[in-house]
Length: 303
Length: 262
Image (tube, rainbow over all chains, first blue to last red; front, side, top):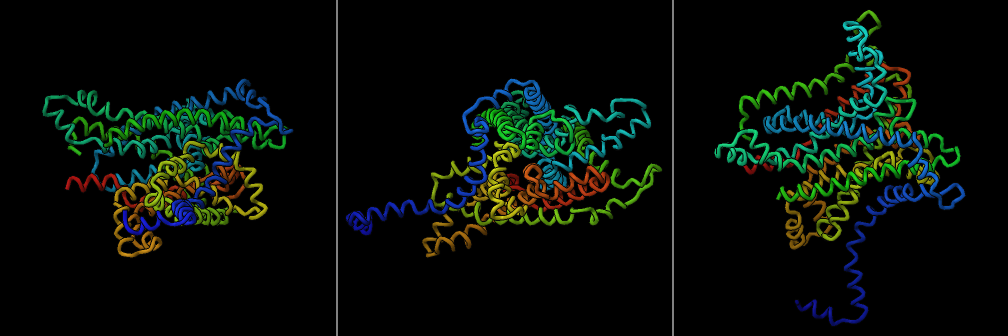
């Protein structure tokens, strides 16, 4: 203990109080940040979770939650959303994972790698509405592929674009941004595989299959599963692409919420929207919980 | 990484071709669709030339650009100092800060907009119906990505030692942060800003459901009336975002690996 500290410890009651204030003073630095987050993020989230149980007259009710959990149209929306998310998470995971391997085995600082990563960022995090138009230009009523098939093959599935506006259309379009997201999320894991491991396997007489079965595969598995869960949550939360593609009808939950917000003037419309949103929070919450658990395993490997 | 064997090299090419075809076909279709000149199969750039005359489009682009700059400002004056401060002085707050910054990934925008609508109704008393008030929530939406970029930078340099050295030599806290720490994590901050700009320019959900006319909202409306122009604008926006993102300095991971090998 230094001289100054001894003197301070021995000082009056007022000095102790001052030190306590001084110890808490640094926390003032983070106040503005937490105020912004509290007002524009935590408070609205709290509203969604609680207001789903509040009737128009302010009393507690389970009516809206019950409507969401029992009515066939709502259940169907959740089923569709989960189906689209699961299908595109797996497709995106597999193809995105393979793409990550292909990119990781290219040149380190090559133009190709840079361009692929930039394009992935655009598709995964920027595209939304524009991706819907891209697919309308491809598979829509006057789309390139539609016209091509109609001209050359007559009446096939691809010459009649109504599929694009349904669940399977959403799957095809969503996969378009899931693959790039997988690349972004999974590439660091693939690049974390050490060349030495492969060399050790080879020099001990192991085959390529053995390497992936006993070394590469098990190491990548937690990252891979984690990325799949992230992709699931991403597709489940996506709104822009579906909204731009499907202007009538609400096959998936985010579009159901759009409908509920649009009819907010109707009695209970707002609370109904919040009950749907609460359902989404629950699904995404479970998925993200699994993601965090897997992430713990991953960070153990990275050390 | 080790040189690939012959079979693996063929697999690599096959994968790149298949995935590449799927990812590039819609982009090619956009270019094709937006340059059609009627049923006879001719080509024209009329839709591209008509972009500046599309109703509300330029105004909405201006709004979106302003929002993007405000979000960048939010990151620079709020997130960056908070992160550095927590890193240096409040180690106990590190975990809570990370969780808070990552939360916007776990709460979908479509859920957030349901809860935030009443708050924006209240806010409109102060800001009128200016779409720029979206900057508050947009700044928060960028946190997960901005946090990751800045955090990687903060970890890759030993900021605590740097700060200690600066403090011992008599620098004040503001001087330490502005003059020593920030220049050392410049790349991370730059990456955070670029990804945030792309994110804000691409945001549709919240703007659309709160009835603000941002670029994405107007492009979407345009699609209902002027199919070709909207496809042309979309392709232009995608290319613009691509140019923006390719300018980001390559992420730290690869560089570290390269240095280890050297």
